[in-house]
Amino acid sequence: MRTANFLLISLFAAASLAGSLSAQQPTGDAVQTAPNAQREDAVDSMAGTDLSEDSCTGIWLEINPQNAPSLKEKDVKGVVTDFAKANADGDDSIDQTEFMSACKNKLVVAPNKKK
Image: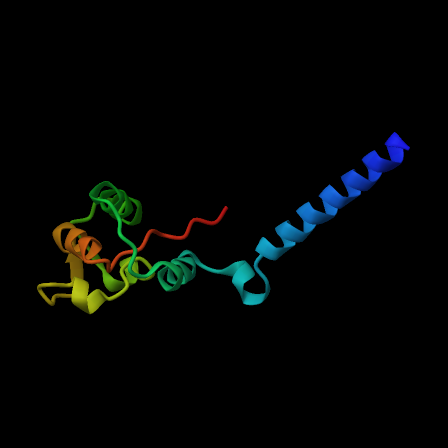
């Protein structure tokens, strides 16, 4: 009897785990998304998020590993929710000062990290 109960509990646990894992798996075109497409998903799900100054600095460093003085719109796509509003001087790029201001004004979201 103990063995039968153990087997039933084990089967139930395995079925629950399998159900929750399959619910988290992407399907269709989402399976093979590029990093910018993943960032766009993050923009939709996290727009208006308050981020600390340290978080903003960390995001800047993550999207700018070469430490360039500024980034083009394509480089911040999916992280900066409104490039025109974030680009205070109206040129074709955002520098770190503009990025930090945009972050403070909830125009930046954390990149979506998929493993």
